[in-house]
Amino acid sequence: MTSEGKTKGQVARDRAVRHLLERLKPDEAAGVRRRLLEANPDLSSEAEEIARSLLHEVEYEDVAAEIENEIRALDYEVLKGRAGSHEGGYVEPSEANDTKNTARFMNQSGTQGI
Image (cartoon, rainbow, N blue to C red):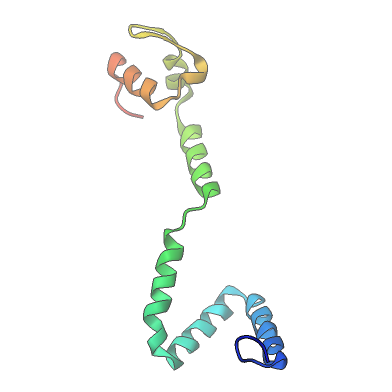
């Protein structure tokens, strides 16, 4: 017997089931989940809590891709116009997309937000 009170055969069977579940396609996994929750309605609140926590997780790759898309969507002429000499001083080209400089440039030039 193992520390959880299961025989070695039960442990091996549990591993095989986990491996099988990992191979399911999304629609098949959804069917298993639906049947499991129908057979065990007391698990519904726990399943919802798990789903809610998963939906709150943010992948840094997704955030980086969204930021990249926003930057790429900016108008080149507006970005180019931010660099160089302005009434408030000089802005390095590498700093032209900095949000503080953007706000300052927008205020000085009378340009509305992008």
